[in-house]
Length: 287
Image (cartoon, rainbow, N blue to C red):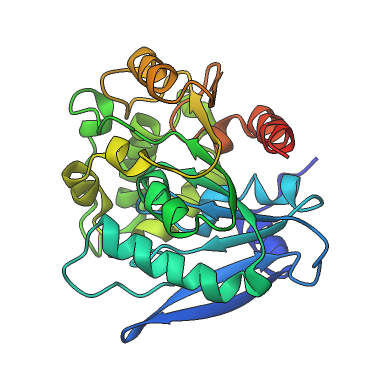
């Protein structure tokens, strides 16, 4: 069977979504909603990772679409969303997104929130702001105790602007292999297309913001059940996966903690089948 071209995959998803915008100051956040007319379905909000966009969830949306109305923003300064005004920090971005949810999620309906990587850094603040209606928070691959300062995640190479694609593509691939996946062969044509498109549009320097904010502090007082999902070989975590597990089990003993074997940071892409089945089960158990 001939592989489906990356743009065909994206077009098929985008033709099924409803796009809307919410405002902040002089800018806008772009939101995409799958199942917009399916008012009877429960609502699931997905937050992508740093330097990404809605397409970090390209393999999650189709699997969960039959069961949820899915709402995915491009974080401020990423994808098609405008860069927020200075000073930019976790609190200001979380406020923009929480205010946007008040507009996008109509009739004060409840929702589950799933956050990947940098999105997780924001989600504790959003959950507290949305305490009246958030049902659960699932953290995926977020470095709760801070970013690892050693190893391949810190060996990324900047791609100069205007570098010819033939020279830029190997650098993008190398960065993906170092940071996002355990198995280099999982960096396929679709992953490359998503990553290169995201890097061309990103203006938010999320890594610097992440290093200035302790995610563990933002999770304190979260007013809903929490779940944690990690790839076994996520290179972003400090001190390591075992340390994160110990911290979660000590501080949030009522939460669930799941590890997907032989997967890296972008676990919902690299091990999409296992991740989608796990996430559907985790969300169902919380109802």
